[in-house]
Structures are given as structure tokens and as C-alpha cells.
Amino acid sequence: MVKKIILGILGVIIVLILVVIILIAIFEPKNSKAMDSAINSTVSLISDKYKVNEVSTGEFEKITVYGIMKFHVKQYDVENYGNLCVMKVNMGLMQMSTIVLTSENKNLPLVSTDYMYILGKRTSYVELFDLVENKDDDYMALMNKIKDIRLSYDSLTDVTPSAAWYDELRTESIYKSGTTDDDDAMEKMLLESVEAVLDAESQLPELGDAQKLAKKKLTKQYSDNLIDKGGVSTDTFKKSMGTDKTREFFDKVFFGTEE
Image 1 (cartoon, rainbow, N blue to C red):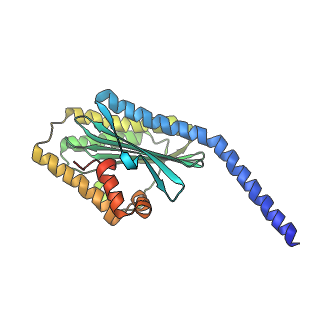
Image 2 (image 1 turned 90 degrees about the horizontal axis):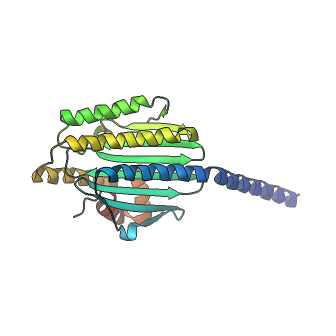
Image 3 (image 1 turned 90 degrees about the vertical axis):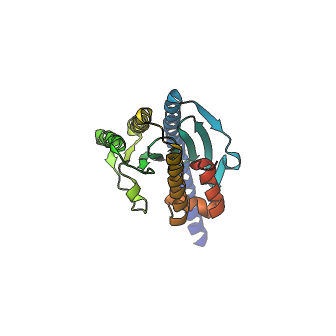
């Protein structure tokens, strides 16, 4: 009797493993292709407008979290703009990419995007953080442009993000979900959002030295608060790398605030 039960359990486990293998075989290639396409198109868009130089991330080139999440990290210096960090992870059943574009010289928001691919489901976050001293008319015009982009993708399902301490820093952002059929639309939404920020940058005057220092201070303050007050991804890195190493990663690579 016991032997039959054990064989039955083993049979169920084998079936489940086979199901997982089949699901990975079906969705992983599609998801990886969609993820890489969105990343490459975004970097290409920025490279078309600025001189972009890849920077060595050193020990942070590959970050392993919980022993199974292996993040591949790239950093770029965007000349006359600031820092660009691209991070992605492929776990078979789930893929995720993060793009962070940090402005140093203009009165612009921090752009942070998270695209998640879980089997046939997608979730897309395009967040703009008000790390600026002054939300003037030009800044609000950009926010209205992002709002127009968000509204133009009403065919995608709206997602309500969890409440967080940094809610007050987001005047306008985009949160959507969809399926594999929406990959092209979600990539286009990402590109339109980034392009809106880049177009705004081209029209804005350069900040003075004191203003640049103040902007960098706001970015560093936001980065430190993520570590001190918490954030979903930040907490994951802290548990894996520790607080000090996470802060070093943020300062050197993720936001590029370190001189």
C-alpha cells in the first residue's frame, strides 16, 4: 500500500516536471525574444540621439539572488545626459528586464521601467520619478505627454501598483498588463515614453553647476531611501548582497551617482 502511494506521488511529480519543461519550451523563447527586443530597441533609440559608451560594471556584471535569479547587468554613459543601466534575468518560467535612465544635466525625471514576462502574461511598468527641484511648465508638459501615451494604450489592462513611500514622487507613470499578443504594443509604449523624455531634453536649457549638484543630491537621496525605507527589488538585493553592497551597486551602477 505504502509502495503504491509512493509510486503515485512520484508519478505526479514526474508529470509536473514534464509540464514545467513543456511550458518553458513553449514560452521561454518567445519571452526572451520580446524582452531582448524591448531592451535593444530602447538602447538603440537613445544611441541614435546621444553618444552612448558602455561602462564596465566590474563585480556587478552578474548578480545572483537566492541562488537562482541571475541578473545580467550593463551600464552606459550617455554623453550630455547621464547614466543608463540595463538589467535582465531569465529564469525559464519568468523573464524580467529593468531599464533605468538617470538625467544629470536637465530638469528631467528619473525613468525606471520594469517589464515582466511570466509564461503568456506580461506586466509593464514605465515609471517617472520627480527627482527635480522644480516641476515647472516644461516639466508638466512632459508629464502631460506621458499621460497622453498612457491613455492611447487603453487596450492594455491597467495595473494598480502597491502603495509605497515614493508614491508622491510619481506625477505620471504607466502600469499595464497583457499577453504575448501585446508584445509589440508594450514595446512601442516603452519607446514612445522614452522618446518623449529625450525630446523634452533636447528643448530644455542645461542646469547650472549648483542645480546639477542639487539634482544629483535628490537622486542620491532617492537611492538611499530605497535602501533605508524599502522597495520590492531593493529588499531582494539587500537580502542577497547586504545593505552596504546594495548601496555600492546603486551608487556606482544602477543610478551612477558616484563620481
